[in-house]
Image (cartoon, rainbow, N blue to C red; front, side, top):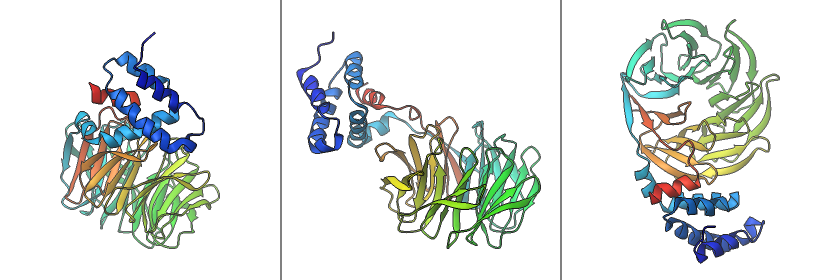
Length: 385
């Protein structure tokens, strides 16, 4: 049996004294600091693993949060980030999306076009022309063969990516389109506009199935739930809404932001939501209760875009403060900051890459190695290796 230093044995015992984690908060905070220092002084991987595995999950999460905060600079150096630039647009890029396979990207721009990119080479494969005003939102179909774009010209277009031609033009909105989304089955679309409404549309017939009414100002962002039965919307009216698409009714209204909600996202499991706001914060919500789980603070300007990692443990936020932040959702801690004006952000399907859009007419591909499965033990080894 391994002989642990007495300090580690004692502190680990102390941290296990009570199941009521909150009742010993300050005591455990001090103990956690000492435990962290003791753990980082260990040289044996086997010994370190044994100590960590003996800790309750809540203790591990608290320690992880402390590692991320206390050793942020060291972690940044240990987790290198590189990027590839996608250049070709002649005006600001408003929206980015990864293809389902992760090898391609879509971008929408103020230059009235959308582009399909090869992420291996960084080259444009197709330029999608047809809109008469800015393209504010783009989305891939689940099969990856089609794209949906939304424009200030009040229309959405469904494109054949192999030919670069428009298959269907969706009309009916009386104001600019702010956001579009394709359903998991690929047969329906959601289109949001400045007229306070969202349309659920049949892509085969090109007709409106449901009109989602309830917001009192522009709808800025819309997305389908992973199962396709629900929708999430964000609005300038400072709220987000969860909708039942079968009935077209609001299930839950999410209040808490003190300014416009600019971006929304569903978690991969469909139980949580992310919202980004002009109030410089992002929020993680419990969809069942409608309550805020975590408030992500740190940006110094509006949060324009939010995204969940494929594993659901991390979030991306893009802000007008010229940074993109990667957050650990269990602790609400920012663990990485990318210097880029992120008007739109997206995670790759594998979780190792990030796309960001910028007002400098460029989209960037960033590499985020190790972050998909990073746990407390791995974090400590990053610092002790």
